[in-house]
Amino acid sequence: MIDKLDIYEMLSKIRKQKPLVHHITNWVTIYDCANIVRVIGGLPIMAHAPEECGDMTAISDALVLNIGTLTTPLIDSMKISAKSANQKGIPVILDAVGVGATKFRDEKALELINEYNISVIKGNASEIGKLAGEDVKTKGVEATDVQIDLVETAKKLSVSKNATVVITGAQDIIAHKDCIYIIKNGDEMLSTFVGTGCIVASVIGCFCGVEKNYTKAAASALVCFGIAAELVAKEVDTPSAFKERFFDKIYMLNKEDILKHQKIDKIL
Image (cartoon, rainbow, N blue to C red; front, side, top):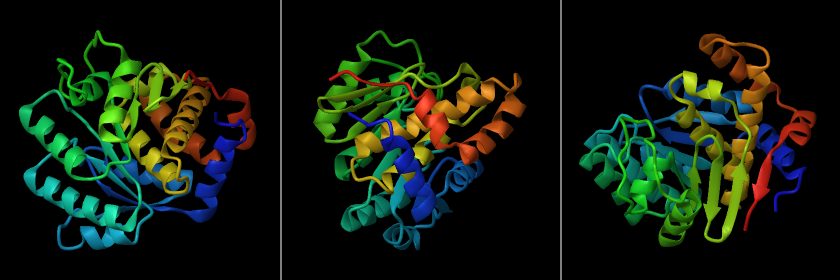
């Protein structure tokens, strides 16, 4: 179980140690991903070129891969960096954006998962369901109504791929085999602007960069992310204002906020 103080202590580590988080990521949200890493206390780097991406990973503390704007050359760079990360022993976070929408996307995501040691596999219900072998579809990059047991699906994928699995949604599910966390922090305003899932993957990368228990790290990242959203939603009611204030709130998140507002349950 995560102690009430653990989450703040991990956040404090990020701010003190400033983990370097290498991204090969989505062109739509790349600026927001870099910015969220910086405001939470880490250091972002976005190096996609195959000539340098492996070297950049080798000096990093975590690697975030996001297949949102997928191309074959981009996958080639991801594989170079994933190999480098595995050789160094740093965490690899895969954001399986849009899996379930096209055959190409499904195949490339599975190649990454099957060929490399992926520490955290993150997606929405339909993306994770598809990777777990369920008959589901994804609407572009948005989840569809998935009529499956999400906890069991997360456990199934976690066991088969020996990875922490994160399903984001109204309640976030974090699974590593028989260790299951349910995160109830967050606000529906997060769904009003593009890139929420991408930036939370970057936050997970920061936490994994300072904590070797990647399940605990992922759960803590989602708690902090959700608390910031709840606090901002009390102050603004439009998407643009929410997004701007959200980055400020992550930057200012403190011990009192986390101890008072965290909503995390361990169900197994």
